[in-house]
Length: 173
Image 1 (cartoon, rainbow, N blue to C red):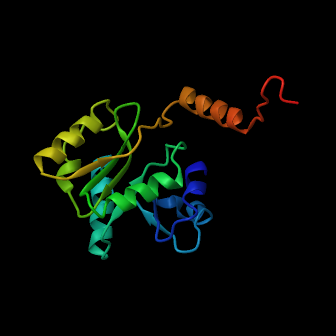
Image 2 (cartoon, rainbow, N blue to C red):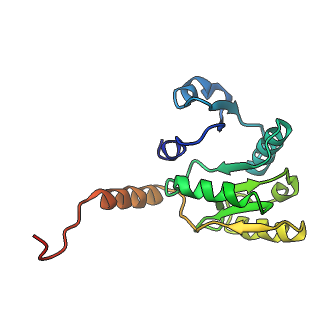
């Protein structure tokens, strides 16, 4: 829900989900202008390549995919990605664990997603190497942590609680 809440200002969102029988639950999360779409089969790369291909086939000129496991992202991160896709072929939001939390493209690039060791610490580096080989002009967003483990989640909850706690300066009465 945290990531979805931060996407509330955007229209034209396809909320991709799995398993396919979760559609009814997903419908409750939709906002006006959003669609629930079952993810394609295959590994993460195949699912992302398919999402990009579907969007470009439908006439999109720029497409951004964000993971649901990065509650630290802010709407401004997505606006920045969207803006830079006017000038760049690829926008990536690198993750602390070596992956990425956002990927944006101006056209389908299925080669970026083939034979990648998903969920490894090399995903971001491999993607950047392929982008260079393909001659893609790239832009990098800020590095963020994602939430893959219980410890990651507890760190996020603690950071959120701290950010909501009023802080007083000593002697400022």
